[in-house]
Amino acid sequence: MIDRVAPTRRPDHAADGEQRWRKLLFLHWAFPVEAVRPHVPAALDLDLFDGTLYVGVVPFVMEQVRPSWLPRFASFDFLETNVRTYVTHRGEPGVYFLSLEAASSLACLAARATFGLPYFWARMRREERDGLVDYETERLLGGPARSAFRYRVGPELGPSEVGSLQHFLVERYLLFVEKGGVIHRGQVHHPPYPVRAAEVLSVEDGLLARAGLPSPTTPPALAHYSEGVDVEVFGLEAR
Image 1 (cartoon, one colour):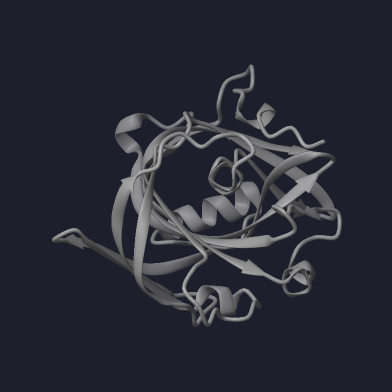
Image 2 (cartoon, helix red, strand yellow):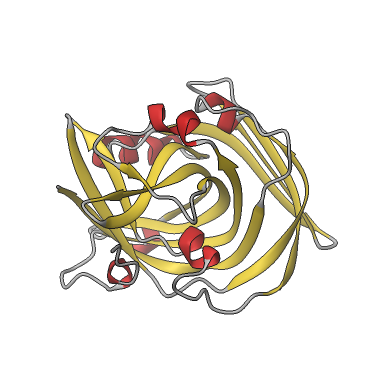
């Protein structure tokens, strides 16, 4: 039995960094297991909901990003877009990142060096006007890869209840990465997301295709939005 509540509890030691995640759009498509399995380390099990495997694309705003040793006045902001799927390791549920785009070359270098995550420097743009949001990302190194999203924020959906698909997709607090043939686990801590619906008006995909997956031919199966949370980040541990 997978415990999906335990990862939400804060570790009992000091955090390694702080971030503010803002204006998150969670887009999810269902994918065949055989399409995703080759891109995930063999030591990780794919985490399915009622027999369905999901891959998410999450464009959002990173604010006040800093390691714990850096003064708050020196923190920095940038746009980020993640491509992720859902996995378990020794019974713990988390995410596995297929790619991460950041509009900061410094953030990409730091995350690759510290966490071993597949970050790519990208040019990004987010504009909000008359209730419509346009978000674009274009990879500058390691590309080409471009994606664009247009959406409208919808009504509040209420708390994500444990056992629901919304909770399964949104409330993820562990990440797993393979470094030197060893699985490492990282953790974040934050309050539960305030979740709203999202109406997706258009999607141009380049990130899923660049990650080696079939480019979707249909709109996302699910779309959620959150104004965001304040996050504590804890370092990697070999598992």
